[in-house]
Image (cartoon, rainbow, N blue to C red):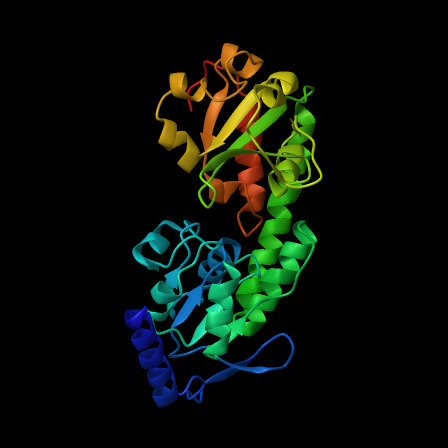
Length: 303
């Protein structure tokens, strides 16, 4: 405890000494608020925001990210400060941030309160619909904030073209495979299934499939064999961390309800990257194309 108090004090002194918005090179945010984006030490705790920052070319001042931010590959070279809902104040403060960017999906609450009490500037962007139009608005807002408006417009136009291509190509398939997506929740250390109400559910639908599990929330705890057994999916997708943690098809089929499904019998259980499926971003159109090929593949085709 004494160590944390000393660390907090030293960070407050450092922030007071250097000044958070001392640089003269300012850009305008989407709200017209002047924002210093040069010379800062930025921590971003949202995987969607981080991917967009890199796509915009606005990552220069990033010094740390949360554990779930894994795209693009070079982001792995940055320091991680914990899972976005299981953050450590000590880890964040050790990076001496001038700005913390997050999407409000962060915690625990007492850590965020601690950071607020230290008056470290925090930034969130608009709470847009989780669809293509909402993603375009987010990219444009972030582009304005970082002084990358032209790049944001380019990304927005490319996303629209990629989605048009993906949705047009879906018409070539007459079948609508039932899909289950299994995700390992690192904060709670449990396996979860995504529902139709999730972002992944939308992407599977855009790819010409349908999520086989319903629910009011985006994810359900995989605690009962009946959940997957009754859904009996044609295809099962496991996000990367959960897939790699199990390590073999045999272990995957030991998950509740998996072994008796059409997906297991026909060898249609596949690994997908979490960052290709769990949120929308600049690559969503291309990711939908990849998903379309995956869920319409027969079991013995090579990945």
